[in-house]
Length: 376
View 1: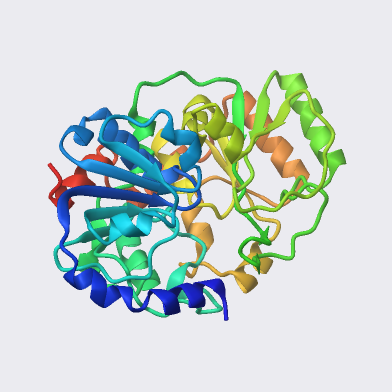
View 2: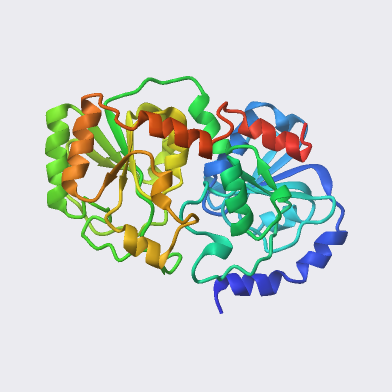
């Protein structure tokens, strides 16, 4: 029996209890068991910056609660994910990106599954192992366009009227004051192997944990090219990606972790705004980056393997990749050279795709979500 199955078994009696416990409609719970970040973190930042904590009691349940407690704003408290359960049973509103309580929302309670990106790779009921039992422990989830409204409905086996077409909180930052592009390329690969999730999504091998640049020698080649062009490459591995050993230090390539970003009080959306191009693959961040209208390259060395083991939410995943399709180190070097030279061959395709996957392109996603929930 998995930990998820055990949690559901232990939580089963809480659904009838939750239905009768009175709810405080001036109480908001933000829950993110992988740290206060992504859509949950962005919605929290919006609530605080717009003074909602003067009208609502806000509780944040996250694994990094101890680091945040000392700087808690007025009427805000940070607790462990376990302690957040007590708040959940009494709160009027709950928002989560990672993790959840397998407890059905009460009639006078609004629970929103903000998720963590519009899925290109399968999640929920579409995953091949089909561990998802079809139960939706939320009132609503969100989407960025009619395309993803349908996909999210299928992933979570919920009717489309439970999918709010609002956009994602994490993308609102992309519309804030422009910090100016730098000679910086950002690489955001999705994870292939995770011991934490006991999953393997690809047979990709190599000493770096990266697709395409899968050896230290290939990274050294990239480093030399970047030096020649006067560019920097920042690689942010997926938070669930297991490390693949020690790599040598490079002058123009930097690896940055989720922990480091938190310590610097920043996130990948700040890095996106500074970058002039993105390298990624099957990650949902590619849809977010379209909002910036800058070049994207997709590393597809393990496309067939990833499709066989994890699978995609659409029949033709390449149709949702508007940019350079790369399957080797030569192609990666070519993309970097084109970026440095200001060449942008896929601008028209990118803008067309952006209109398909991002209906709202205005930076007001948080505002729409709160309005849909009746939070004023």
